[in-house]
Each structure stands twice: as structure tokens, then as C-alpha cells.
Image (cartoon, rainbow, N blue to C red):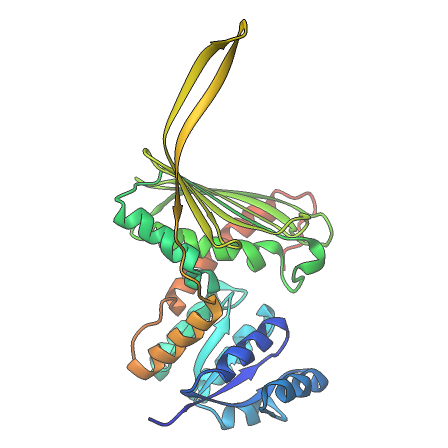
Length: 330
């Protein structure tokens, strides 16, 4: 089978990671890269042994598929151009800024028969996969889930606000964990700290017959945190997406004992350490993209999934900005 010819549009920090992974795949021919900065494009192309396309049109002319890692505000135009030329597309999250744009692109992919896959990379994180398996196979019925996604300002993207940049990751994970359930209620509150847009946001989502979910996203916290806490009637499960660890706490027993004229408190808990396979999420994501094109089957994260995550994220954003004295919604 001939190699799949792929190009990368946008080679910033995330785009270069796509180039690195694609260049290592034996079934892929990394044809070329394009970036608004020609110097940056040449630097990355030289590093990974590929060519620089002089324009987006030249990039798309020589490929079967394209990986788009440009800033979110440019996604709609870039994905639309790629689909219109008959190319399969892997676009970084969020699919677009606006829900109506996402719906247009989703319909366009259906009409052209081309794959439109969105890079919600945390779905490919082995920690999340194992957490999901633990809940489903263990017959767990969570009644509370807490997501925390915190970063420092210096390491965060400012192309969009923290809700569209970070919280949307966990909105997608939440919808996947609660698949088949309907949202009963949601609300959000945010704060502007360092920019003119939401830098710190907290959201609550309740599902009919399902869990109450809290999501916190911040780009002004001096510690990087990526965690999911799941509470069920029989266990408290903590998943650390960065450290690749899952711990399950069960069978807690508390005792009080008289000691030296006082009372001592002891708590005994069974702690299970869940084994998490070692794998790079982006590699799994790219391999899924290739598999979906080759097999003509849906990827793990479809354009419909991404649009649904964007729809709820945008609703939460509107609530957050409505609560500000001087909203600065894009």
C-alpha cells in the first residue's frame, strides 16, 4: 500500500510535535510543512527532513491529508479550504471558535466523504482510557466528578480564553464519561486576571440520573495540574493525567483509641494502584487518524463529538462572561 501523503499546516509548539510523530510513521510520507513564519517553517523542516511549502495551496496540492495546528481563530478557514480540495483533515482542538462554523465543517466533511478528526488529545491519554475502563468494567456509577486543569500564565496560550483553550478538554472527557446521559443543569463563573478575557473559570454540570461535575480551568495558577477525581458509592478514584497514575481508595474505616489520657484517631483505607500503560497520546492520536483514513471508519474523536463539546463549552463561556461587570467576549 502506498504511503499516505500528509502535510502539516502550522508548526508552532504543537505543530512541531505533529511533524515529529508523523515523520516517524512508516506508512506516512511527510511531504511538506507550511507556517506563516517562513523561518520557523524552515527550521522545523530541516530538523525533521522534509520540505517547506511556499503557500497553503502548494501544501494541499501535494498531499492526501493535512494536520492543521494553527491558532483556533483560523481553524474554520483552514479546514474549509482543505476539505474543499478533497483532503482528509486532523485539526487541533477546538474544532473552531463558533458552533455554527463547526456544524458547517461537519456537514462539509460528510458531503465530501473526507475524514474530519479533531485533536482532543486527552481522549488518547492512557490514564483516561484506564480510568474509563475501571469505571465501566467495575460497574461503578459515579455521582460526582471533579476535573482540574491548571497552568501558569507563562506556559499558557493566549490565542483564546482559558475556557476554549483548556476547559474544553475536560468538557469533552466529561461528555465521553457520561455518554448517553442528558445535561440537566449547567452554570459557570469566571474571572479576568491577567488578560482581557477569562483566565480562571469554574463550571458545574449536572446530568439526569448521573453525576454532578465540577470543572476548573486556570492559566494563572503557579502549578501545572491535570487531574480527575471520581466519587462512587464504593470508591474514590484519583487520576493524575501528568504523572500517569491512578489510585482507588476503598473500604475506609475510622477508629478512635484512648492513648495517654487522650484520644487518637486512625483511618485505614485500602489503596489500589492501577497500572497505566506507557504510550504517547499524540502518537496514538495520529495512528488513529491514519487507521480511520485507511479503514474508512470513524476515529475515536469525531467532528460530531468535537462540535458537541464546543456547544457546551460556548454555553458555559457565555454564562461566565455574562457574570462579569465588563464582558470581553470574542
